[in-house]
Length: 309
Image 1 (cartoon, helix red, strand yellow):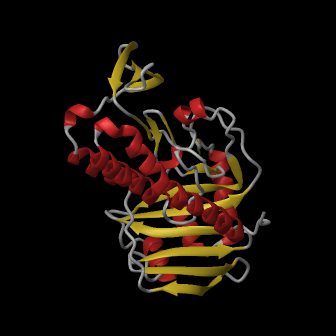
Image 2 (cartoon, rainbow, N blue to C red; image 1 turned 90 degrees about the horizontal axis):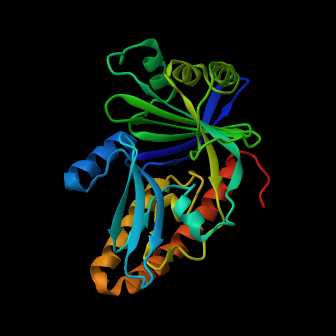
């Protein structure tokens, strides 16, 4: 996509106008399954342990190895895996991070995100698709941010005839169960969301939301920047290292850059100098990601009409 456009929508008059527009935008969007497929195909097939549940880890007394215990889901058998380094990429609710920082609390942002993907393959000329393309004429080449009163949405097209949309809604923190920030939603919740969409957004966008199968809610958290992201031979990357709100359009990019920098540091220092490699990784990434987390927090609160700290 080459265009980034921020616009505002009047919910009563159902009209939109442009606030800012960047025509030199260089942005690539991918569905998670597409990205995972690329990564999977690029790696040796024998390194994946499908159907295994992480249970615990322990660092050897001499700090030279780390042992992971996991359960094989199909057989209920517990296995142990020993390695030089444990890379914790287990997300913003990281259980590995909690082992080192048991008192760290995530900060609820004050809002959740309704999300969905409309697959319109075979329906390219439907009234809904023709309508959304008329309302958002550069869809496919533009990342749209649409601001309403104390709310905003993100809209863009993915490969293979899919439209991705996100709608941020201010609300009290929901009660979460399990270890995921994704909430399952009931039919009545979806119906209420559709009704609110009709009130807030232009009819063409509301219709896209209505025709999206299985929309879901992400509860938005972040945390104050960490002071440390490795301990002995255990290192955090991605959301485990820097839980962040998603408003910088860089949450996934932050994780990818973590992995790239970590890989380069390990290659530079070698297995015999693991501590030096992790020190360089930490000193390189922490200052950058800390600024990005706080910037994204501020942007989110501004767009949602919330009080700035």
